[in-house]
Image (cartoon, rainbow, N blue to C red):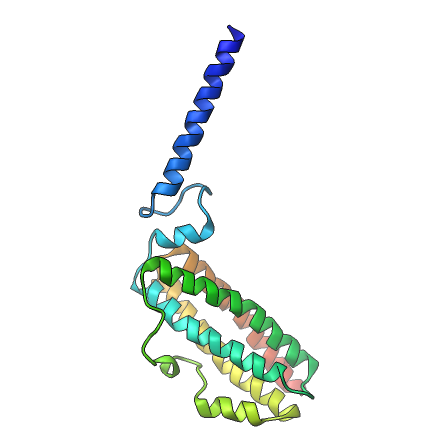
Length: 197
């Protein structure tokens, strides 16, 4: 009797496991809430709207330029250590976000290319701005990087706030909230650094 009861309980547990795994892998629509049974990236496919797509399409080139600006300053000699530390921090944070944003666009069947509209976005530097940063050196380069990155971050914060207000995808909204929080803090740090250089 005891053994047969164990077999029944085991069979019930096995059936429940199979049912749960089938539910977690076969659903791509709905609320996207599967009680933690799917990977975080999987929920990106669940719900999204045009605001989510626009957020990803605009934030990718925006982040890519921030990484490029950071690379420029990191390659220079005679740059204040606090500035290079900040540039490395920006690069380390935004590189993985670019990958995630591209993954979402792939999942949503959307094109990452916005057709050359990059420089119309808030905070984006022009080619001339980038050339000036490239040619600057020492304290001038440190100051210029901070001034440009403050404006760049302000643009990113505005874009992220739009996503929070208008987006539907929870993962994208969470990234936007992180961008608002971290980049607002970095703006404050950069403004303080400008005053001390």
